[in-house]
Length: 147
Image (cartoon, rainbow, N blue to C red; front, top):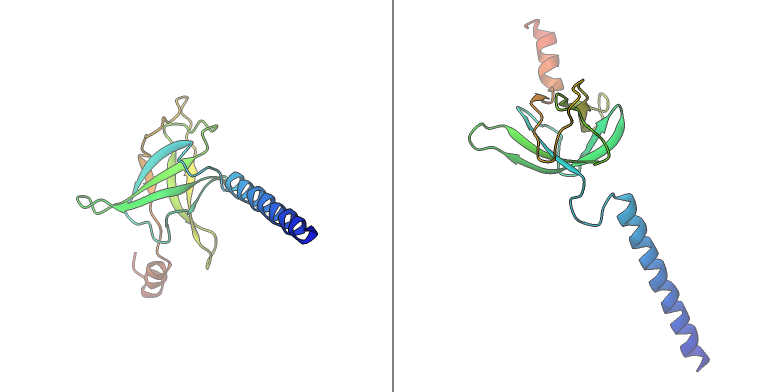
């Protein structure tokens, strides 16, 4: 009989630990599975290195992530959907760029704030975008001496 009580207590402790761990993961990942926050769009000529889940940063601080990435079949541009923190008031003349963490680092999307008094609304699109720069093409231009 005491063996049964011990097993029940251990099972309960494991269950409580699992629930606490799950709550921690959901809290630190920024959501409960739904897309909350400010959803904005951006279109790039080249989005090399960007995938779903890539960080969106402003001034080096993570403010969101890429939630969708698709190719527009008409313009052949990469269209990104960005989920940003809804407590930020992003000026509507802000821009976005695909940036690199370093020479060999990963890519991220950088929001470059503008100076407008009006904030972007949910579903708005960034008009000023700068795609990723290919390091290989830059090196080839340097070596060949062409512009």
